[in-house]
Length: 130
Image: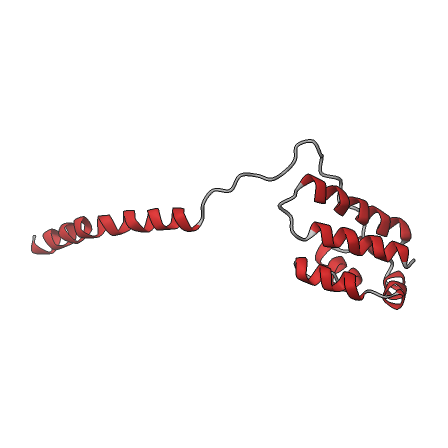
Protein backbone atom coordinates (compact mmCIF):
# COMPACT_ATOMS: atom_id res chain seq x y z
CA UNK A 1 0.00 0.00 0.00
CA UNK A 2 2.81 2.37 0.90
CA UNK A 3 4.58 1.51 -2.35
CA UNK A 4 1.43 2.32 -4.35
CA UNK A 5 1.05 5.64 -2.52
CA UNK A 6 4.69 6.50 -3.29
CA UNK A 7 4.24 5.76 -7.02
CA UNK A 8 1.08 7.87 -7.20
CA UNK A 9 2.78 10.79 -5.43
CA UNK A 10 5.77 10.53 -7.79
CA UNK A 11 3.56 10.63 -10.87
CA UNK A 12 1.71 13.68 -9.59
CA UNK A 13 5.01 15.41 -8.83
CA UNK A 14 6.51 14.61 -12.27
CA UNK A 15 3.47 15.61 -14.35
CA UNK A 16 4.46 19.32 -14.61
CA UNK A 17 7.94 18.31 -15.77
CA UNK A 18 6.51 16.26 -18.60
CA UNK A 19 4.39 19.23 -19.66
CA UNK A 20 7.42 21.55 -19.48
CA UNK A 21 9.40 19.20 -21.72
CA UNK A 22 6.63 19.24 -24.29
CA UNK A 23 6.51 23.03 -24.32
CA UNK A 24 10.30 23.28 -24.65
CA UNK A 25 10.41 20.83 -27.54
CA UNK A 26 7.74 22.81 -29.39
CA UNK A 27 9.83 25.95 -29.05
CA UNK A 28 13.01 24.23 -30.22
CA UNK A 29 11.37 22.70 -33.30
CA UNK A 30 8.73 25.16 -34.47
CA UNK A 31 6.52 24.19 -37.38
CA UNK A 32 7.92 25.59 -40.62
CA UNK A 33 5.79 26.83 -43.45
CA UNK A 34 6.63 25.26 -46.78
CA UNK A 35 8.66 27.39 -49.17
CA UNK A 36 7.74 25.24 -52.17
CA UNK A 37 6.37 27.30 -55.04
CA UNK A 38 3.29 25.47 -56.40
CA UNK A 39 3.77 27.16 -59.79
CA UNK A 40 6.68 24.77 -60.45
CA UNK A 41 6.31 21.02 -60.63
CA UNK A 42 9.17 18.86 -59.43
CA UNK A 43 10.98 17.39 -62.41
CA UNK A 44 11.69 13.70 -62.71
CA UNK A 45 15.07 12.68 -61.27
CA UNK A 46 17.49 12.57 -64.24
CA UNK A 47 19.38 9.48 -65.30
CA UNK A 48 22.71 8.53 -63.77
CA UNK A 49 25.56 6.54 -65.36
CA UNK A 50 24.88 2.81 -65.24
CA UNK A 51 21.70 3.54 -63.19
CA UNK A 52 23.83 4.14 -60.09
CA UNK A 53 22.08 5.37 -56.95
CA UNK A 54 22.00 9.09 -56.29
CA UNK A 55 24.54 9.20 -53.43
CA UNK A 56 27.04 7.25 -55.53
CA UNK A 57 26.45 9.62 -58.45
CA UNK A 58 26.71 12.79 -56.37
CA UNK A 59 29.80 11.70 -54.46
CA UNK A 60 31.54 9.39 -56.92
CA UNK A 61 30.95 11.09 -60.26
CA UNK A 62 30.14 14.78 -59.77
CA UNK A 63 31.68 15.08 -56.27
CA UNK A 64 29.28 17.83 -55.21
CA UNK A 65 29.38 16.84 -51.56
CA UNK A 66 26.57 16.94 -49.05
CA UNK A 67 25.48 20.55 -48.78
CA UNK A 68 25.70 24.07 -50.15
CA UNK A 69 29.28 24.71 -48.98
CA UNK A 70 30.54 21.53 -50.68
CA UNK A 71 28.64 22.26 -53.90
CA UNK A 72 29.94 25.84 -53.98
CA UNK A 73 33.52 24.67 -53.42
CA UNK A 74 33.17 22.08 -56.19
CA UNK A 75 31.76 24.74 -58.53
CA UNK A 76 34.69 27.04 -57.82
CA UNK A 77 37.29 24.31 -58.38
CA UNK A 78 35.95 21.97 -61.07
CA UNK A 79 38.24 21.72 -64.10
CA UNK A 80 38.16 20.29 -67.60
CA UNK A 81 40.27 17.39 -66.29
CA UNK A 82 37.56 16.69 -63.68
CA UNK A 83 34.94 16.70 -66.44
CA UNK A 84 37.03 14.22 -68.43
CA UNK A 85 37.05 11.91 -65.38
CA UNK A 86 33.28 12.29 -65.12
CA UNK A 87 33.00 11.22 -68.76
CA UNK A 88 35.13 8.16 -68.03
CA UNK A 89 32.73 7.29 -65.19
CA UNK A 90 29.82 7.34 -67.64
CA UNK A 91 28.46 10.90 -67.47
CA UNK A 92 27.08 12.05 -70.80
CA UNK A 93 26.44 15.59 -71.97
CA UNK A 94 22.70 14.83 -72.03
CA UNK A 95 22.85 13.70 -68.40
CA UNK A 96 24.78 16.79 -67.33
CA UNK A 97 22.27 19.04 -69.10
CA UNK A 98 19.35 17.16 -67.55
CA UNK A 99 20.84 17.54 -64.06
CA UNK A 100 21.45 21.24 -64.68
CA UNK A 101 17.81 21.68 -65.75
CA UNK A 102 16.66 19.70 -62.71
CA UNK A 103 18.55 21.92 -60.27
CA UNK A 104 17.59 25.11 -62.09
CA UNK A 105 13.94 24.09 -61.69
CA UNK A 106 14.52 23.01 -58.09
CA UNK A 107 15.99 26.44 -57.30
CA UNK A 108 12.80 28.08 -58.54
CA UNK A 109 10.46 25.43 -57.11
CA UNK A 110 11.94 25.34 -53.63
CA UNK A 111 13.74 28.51 -52.53
CA UNK A 112 14.27 26.84 -49.16
CA UNK A 113 16.71 24.35 -50.71
CA UNK A 114 20.11 25.97 -50.06
CA UNK A 115 22.06 23.46 -52.16
CA UNK A 116 20.10 23.62 -55.42
CA UNK A 117 21.50 26.96 -56.71
CA UNK A 118 25.08 25.80 -56.28
CA UNK A 119 24.43 22.46 -57.95
CA UNK A 120 22.70 24.31 -60.79
CA UNK A 121 25.78 26.52 -61.27
CA UNK A 122 28.09 23.52 -60.97
CA UNK A 123 26.23 21.58 -63.66
CA UNK A 124 26.22 24.67 -65.92
CA UNK A 125 29.99 24.88 -65.53
CA UNK A 126 30.42 21.15 -66.23
CA UNK A 127 28.42 21.57 -69.46
CA UNK A 128 30.51 24.59 -70.42
CA UNK A 129 33.72 22.59 -69.87
CA UNK A 130 32.43 19.68 -71.94
